[in-house]
Length: 140
Image 1 (tube, helix red, strand yellow):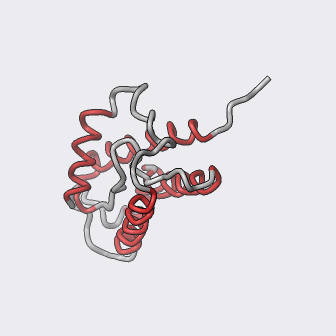
Image 2 (cartoon, helix red, strand yellow):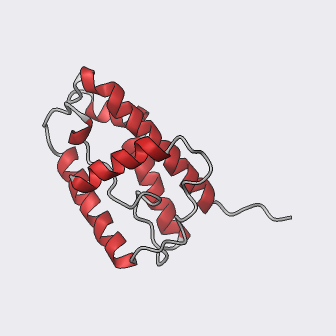
Image 3 (cartoon, one colour):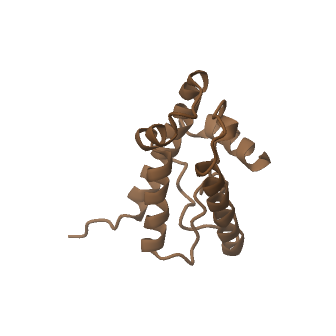
């Protein structure tokens, strides 16, 4: 949970700044193997969460991405654009509030939904930025 807490702290302090957060996503300085391991751990945590019936009483109950501040979904330079795109599409399916809420509404404590939704929205915004960065630019 330490990595998740660090991620929440980073989200709170950095996401309002619109233009500088995605600068290092595809030029990742982190070790590719470590990022792959983190993504595998994220997948394991998500599967456990998805198959659980444990109530979601706080943001700490959700398996948030564990990647570094500028790369929460653990993309790395050895991944093709298609692979990176699949990871981002999966992030939209998991973390978009309009997808998340119907999947887990029976488990979400109403008192925690606003805080969870706020973090989901921030993740979706970050995923949109990454997706835009992955999209090939139109050349004329």
